[in-house]
Image (cartoon, rainbow, N blue to C red; front, top):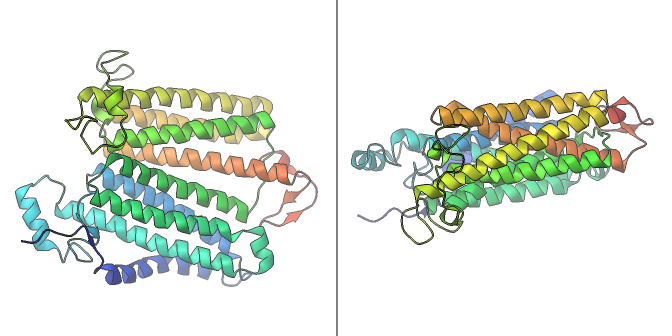
Amino acid sequence: MNPQPLYDLRPLAAMAVLAVLLAAVPLVWVWLRHRRGEATAWLPALTLVTLFLTFDLVLFGAFTRLTDSGLGCPDWPGCYGNASPLGAHSEIQSAQAVLPQGPVTRGKAWIEMIHRYLASGLGIVVTVLMVATWLAPRERRHAISPWWATATFVGFCLQGAFGALTVTMKLYPAIVTAHLLGGIGLLLLLAAQSQVCEPRPLALTRPLVRGVLAVFLLSVLQVALGGWVSTNYAVLACSDFPTCQGAWWPAMDFEHGFTLLRALGIGRDGGMLPFAALTAIHWVHRVGAAVVFVAIALLAWRLVVHGGRAHRRWAGVLVGIALWQLVSGISNVVLGWPMLAALAHTGGAAALLTLLTVMLVRAHQARQRPHLTVLAGGRAAAPVSSSVSQGRF
């Protein structure tokens, strides 16, 4: 029996047709809602829809990983050379008969392929967004640089490559973590692009801007650590809180835990990854969470005290997301990593970075055009008004 090739491009045609059909739903919806407006009035709406779909795909990618479905179809882009698990029924049945709870089962194959279908459909939407932005009138392109959408398109192509490597390299932890960070990066690109489409300057002092940037960088590092925890299955290395294994400083192996270039479950010396290494990964993420939580609390306090009353809404949302992350993170530990808590934790991380990105872009807009306000639709008008000085959403 010939081994299954890792890359089999024969299913591409059928998957492309399905991707077009999936992409048609949001594209037609946006067109119908804005068909009576200006020729490019639907670009901001399409950007927001793409942002929303990307957020959903990030969550479904987390669901795929959490259900151990990443190898549900061990080749790429199809499933045993077919466009769907239906055509691979015999191969999946054989693999499941050998390992009933193994990486290949009917359920896991469908989860993995649905993730690929959704990603393919989003790829069509991203492509349409890029083309539409380049075809926009020159004056509109001056306001909305097409290079934003182009960067999103290039990033999405890179994400596809990392998705393929995730399968063909058998869930190599560094690749899986990079795939997660790539998805978050696309989300932030689209969040920034949505603010460029419809500017709403946010007046922040220089110290506040530096504070937002510091929290953003700390959060990026913490999300990377969270991805490393998840891809190494280190969530349950500590099953109590606030201590770990009944101690404040349990036995930990940082050398093996933070060796990046190694296979899943394998240490830097080629042997099995020690449990102390998983403990080290978990504990560093937990310490990082405490640092980020304190940083968010300080930023929120400074927004309330130094930013004015109108900034309290931003502070409240930041604190709300921080509390969401705290509760969902603790729930993962003490409740044994339930699916709902794990997805909530991933969604909270994505929401936090998206919010911080929006704040940074709006603060930059306020500094670039301090004498202007912004009307609905992104047109500059009149001297500074409440939308700039008060920092509304």
